[in-house]
Amino acid sequence: MPVMSAQLQARLTTLLEEFELFDDWEERYRYIIDLGKDMPPLKAEERNDATRVLGCASQVWLVMDPSPDDALRFRGESDAFIVKGLIAILVRLLDGLPCHAVQSFSIRDTLHRLGLDEALSSQRTNGLVSMVERLKKATA
Image (cartoon, rainbow, N blue to C red; front, top):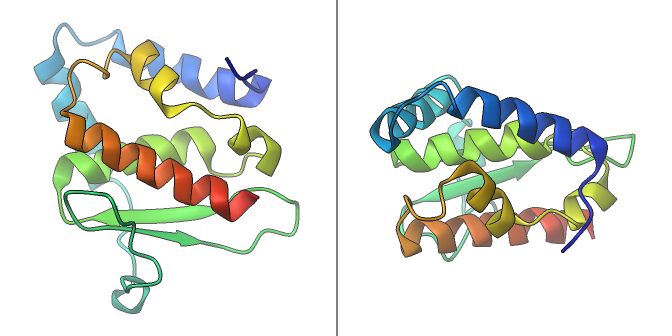
């Protein structure tokens, strides 16, 4: 299993603590949707074939922003509320991390730790894997 950076571990711990405030999956689901609603939308011209993530059941776009400090900077959007929330989780966990920390990130392990591995459909999980692969490719 890849070693998680201290910064990523701290971010994941904060997210885990937030998830523990909810009693059931339905409440967590609503929270994830709310996270997505708080994200700023992409500009219309940023939603294009170059930024679209293939392998997702819904429309997903990830925009990489330049970073002078060898860190991943990105934003995203989806036409599905839950997916936009999942993108918000990825942004909270990975945005601004050094590229090497992104390379060692395991979405499947993270979903398991958050208790989302059994709550998300295989299509949603595969879509998240595709998003993370896009982010890792951008940091390679």
